[in-house]
Image (tube, rainbow, N blue to C red; front, side):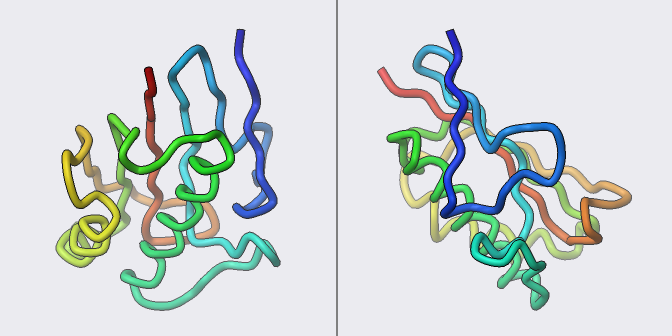
Length: 126
């Protein structure tokens, strides 16, 4: 059985998908970009500002499902410019302070709406 997770505290999906799916004890959170949950508008700004918005959106979805960053076991980070890795990593470290999850960071040619960073995650609870 799977449960669909959606919250008004994170941006509405911009395609045929949901913010997250809970299957058993595992939560699969769709990739988030820097969109305002209130307006759906892009949050344009520095890569640090974009990354913070992305992580706040992930936090809202995790919270809606009853999870937290402590429950995240895997993240995937997509960057349009690997020169932004250091800044993204610094902001990311503010959210994952202990027992950081497994992770990959990959460079991509482009992201939805021309954004510079997208992050998805998988969380698990007993």
